Image (cartoon, rainbow, N blue to C red; front, side, top):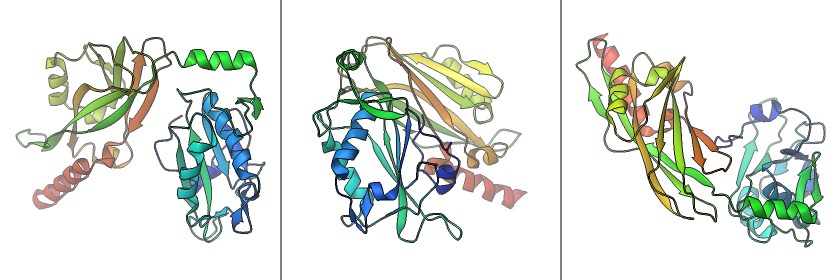
Length: 324
């Protein structure tokens, strides 16, 4: 479940219209009553937060009815600013406090939008919590079962407690490092090499003894120079080439303690005239983090989100116009 990108109305319209263990729809009246916070909202929201955090995580959509249709949305000015208020109130709705979640505000997209003026649909994304089990306001623990949030039994609570004994290692930073390197002696045309580094952190309560990071990159942005550098680096196992992709892997040489953040690998991508459209179109670097016997964590980033890549593309296009 990749929720690193902000939600749009088009994404809401593409949702399957059914609720399940990872998806719950609530109409606008569930949160808002004529411009005010609806009575009992804290208790209702607390139950949903507890259930998603204690389970495998999921998404709560507010402003979508039971049929999966946008119902006009919630006013954006509850408690001055609805999104900010939700971000402030959610952590304290469960015990222990919720540490990780996202709130997305999806506003009106234009004429014909199902979302009203001054209104929005709110998407609350809650990942599985390493601090679980979380107790709701009513002093019960909840979990998602058959598309509903239901009280947990003793056996379920024990299962969640055992889950907290596994390390939770995630990528916390993947970003450019240093200045880009311009290569202008290639007869096929100039290119810019962008160097980046990857850091991970152990968000769990348990020592991560064995950690490895796998990085999958689209083949067109991994030039010959990049492949040569990867092969020459002592950090990596031999790179793997599959149709359309290059994969590198590094085993971290030391255990990672709870709350510790460490550097784990570095790499490059190449920006040139042959891959500009791919980069503009959303090419992604995808990672998987393996830690002992825990479920691998995954994520991705678009190089286009880096200003250094956008500047490289602009410079290459300007050079093409000048000499083309």
